[in-house]
Image 1 (tube, rainbow, N blue to C red):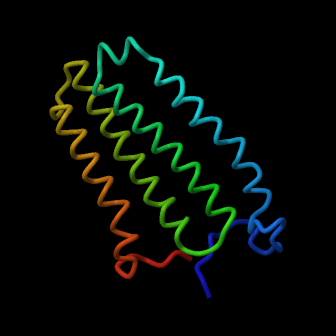
Image 2 (spheres, helix red, strand yellow):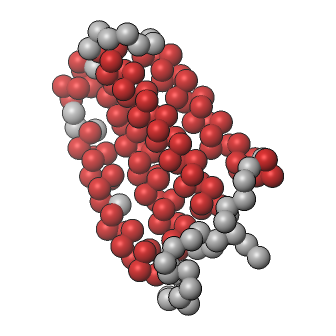
Length: 145
């Protein structure tokens, strides 16, 4: 059998073709949270001007948060290992860009930090590895239970 995302609805039969109908249903309006935040952040002209690297890191972090919400929706709606693996990777990517933001903020405030561009490069490279590794080499990763 395939791997299963564990939730309180796993014992219930699918409704409307969706494995976890109510979790899927509630996940859709929750997408408003990251999408609205991302939309608002794109309009922060002063931040873009005064702290461009920090602003870009914020946008990528919010985009990764949006992807995380989407993968959560996907794993509620379907079965298999793809959505849970993408969700795990999305959580890691979001954490990497959060660290990038914090580094850029520390740099902007003149606290000890690495160069902002190095922080962005490290977050981008690590994000690519985190996303690609479980997809390209799933046999090297723990099974989704």
